[in-house]
Length: 284
View 1 (cartoon, rainbow, N blue to C red):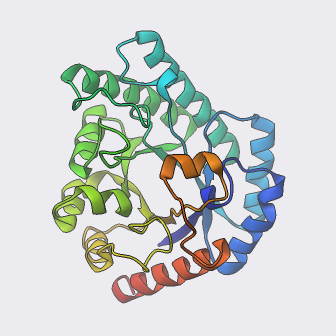
View 2 (tube, rainbow, N blue to C red):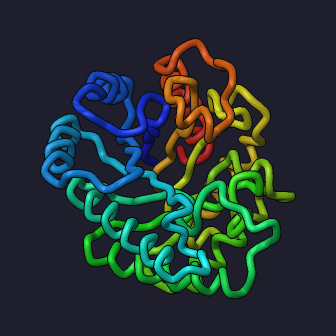
């Protein structure tokens, strides 16, 4: 298993100023970091970042989202095109930084709602756009992990079954899905059944508590999550996704109004210990 920390706990965009945090995470024992990539960046700068992470011996994944002006399920074809081109550009940045997998809910615009569930046409547009994104991902050597979110954040993909069906219809080896314990805790009636049914498409896992703070300190059914991930043979990245109050734009999106941990570094340390202990019980 490989252990990763999502840097959104500290920053919305990694710069040189974040290297001391990244170095501490390496010293703590993390195998990699997840980079927030909410827009394409300068290739040279990200190549340099990739080299710095290589020198530290850290792998990397990345996370991104799409907004209303680049919505892959918009009825406006020019908006859908913008969504595809935006993800292609982010994938190029990922390739420059040596990112293995780009994850997130970029199947549709986050926080955008129609007042109803997805239509057949929206689903078709989403699959078509994602297939083009996946083709580009394959060319640059990055995998896609499409993330289902809870019903309060999006409406196209809410359950693991939704995401697995979506990835299967995209039908490209570079397109799989992200399993996130926070969203599953809200949407799934049976966690074990949900994981087992989509196991063939799980490319990435987010370890996230029900209140978005320290994994293992809340109400998520961790025994079932780890038991079932072991049962289906998952052996990839386990990435801590936790949020705090340091980034106003993230606070607004995640609705984190109070501090629920001692410090960011204490959260990272406790989360790593928790994951290692749970994996050791099952994977040996």
